[in-house]
Length: 206
Image (tube, rainbow, N blue to C red; front, side, top):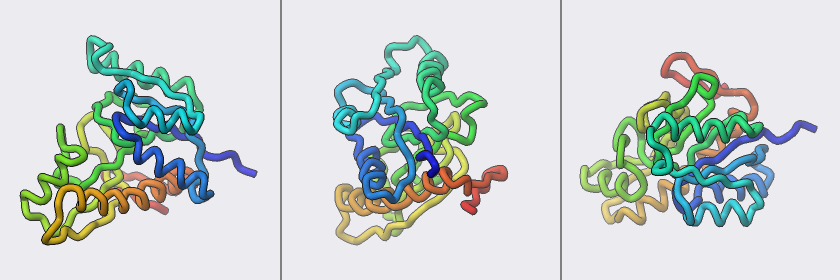
């Protein structure tokens, strides 16, 4: 019997994406094991979720480091001490400088159809407010490779969500998150099965 594919999860807030992954693992639909959780803030609900699941948790705060580079090194030093083969950003709000040995092994989920409504300070409610203010008719979510810019790496998968006339940021967020709960595990399953092929900015799930 094959061992579950080892992943790490990085978060900055409530940990709802982490909980979705835990739920999928419990259902037997996601053949992975979470070997490390890293939080960029102390006392966020995501830490409590991880501890309830008996997952190892490390808190690495940006303000504890004098430079972006040193902060990034601390994160990847922690990850190298684990068997994690894939790093899953899950509501993680810090930019990381990704070293060569982790290129193509760090992915992120974003609550819009990138490249629209992405970039620095575009996360969570801010994204949904911007979508509604702009008058977009379609939103959704994007799973992409993380690189050294916010929301910039090659797109792996997307799912669209229709924007309704009476939507609020909360109602739109609820439907987008439902899409995230489907797409992110599907992409992680593809990684675990070795079905992700990348050529330049084009990604194919074989």
